[in-house]
Image (cartoon, rainbow, N blue to C red; front, side):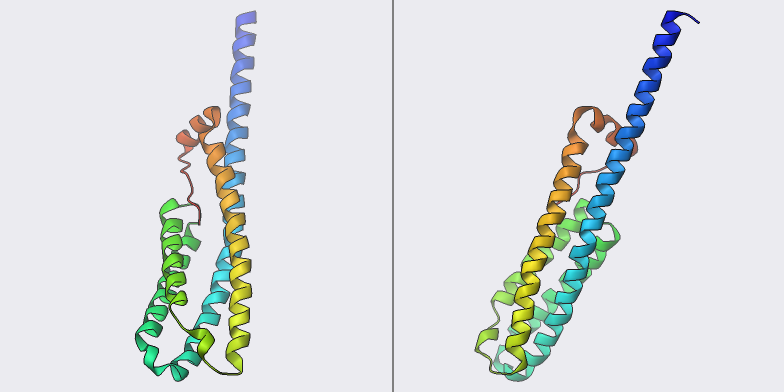
Length: 175
């Protein structure tokens, strides 16, 4: 075997191992992104259940706020549907973007509802649980966004970008 053949074989082996390593890194970063979304998914599911209970309590007490309650119900259903869609593909930018938009609409609908002015024994406790859940969900969003940022940074680094392009890795979106 000649020196040229040895050098070419060594270079080929190094490139092959580098490609395998880059591919494994992209897969592990995408898996971390999916794992971070699982906590967001669970917290959104819990919030949806609390919002349903809040709507039941408010429907009886706030008869005059019917349109706002309907808007909150619709926004809650929309956010739940977007969450289900994003749960199927948490690394897909379109699914996560639709969840982010649905979350913004839900937050706006919740802000328009006068839940503090309603008297009741269960409502203050429910409002406290919702506030605590919102704080926890915001933390889970930050964790997911950090995982997306790490994935996107790796996706656009020069040598890894070639492997990402070759295997069809796409950028993720933040919440």
